[in-house]
Image 1 (cartoon, rainbow, N blue to C red):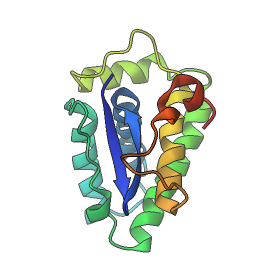
Image 2 (cartoon, helix red, strand yellow; image 1 turned 45 degrees about the vertical axis):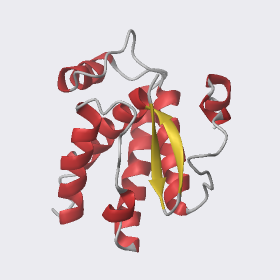
Image 3 (cartoon, rainbow, N blue to C red; image 1 turned 60 degrees about the vertical axis):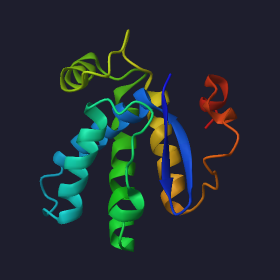
Length: 157
C-alpha cells in the first residue's frame, strides 16, 4: 500500500495513496461545482494540478505543493472552505461513497480500482488531517511515528 506525505510549513501527514487520490478527486469536483466562485489563478492551478495528482497514479509521491500554492491567508481560507464543504458532502453520502462516483473516479484514473466503494469515514479522515495541517494544528513530521495509519488508529481520527 503506497503512501504519500502531505506537507505544509514543515509539518504534514502520511496518507494511503488511494484515500488521498479519492479525496483529491472529490476536492477538485467540489471546486468545479462551485459555479458562483470567480475564476482565479489559485482555483485553476488546483483544479489542474490536483486533478492530475488524483488520476495519474503517482505511487508514493503525490505532491500537493502546498507551500507554493498557498501565498496568502485568502488562499488558505479558500482551501479550508472547500475542505469543509467537501466534508459536508461526504457526510451526506452515508456509509460508503456512492457507486456512481466511484465509477467516475475509476474511469478517470487508471491507478484507482476499488473492490468495493470505500467507507466515507476513511476518505473524510484525509480532509480532517488536511484541515488540521492548514490551520497549524497538526505537528507531525515525515519522520514521526506512522501509528496513525493503522486502520484502528485511522478510524479514531
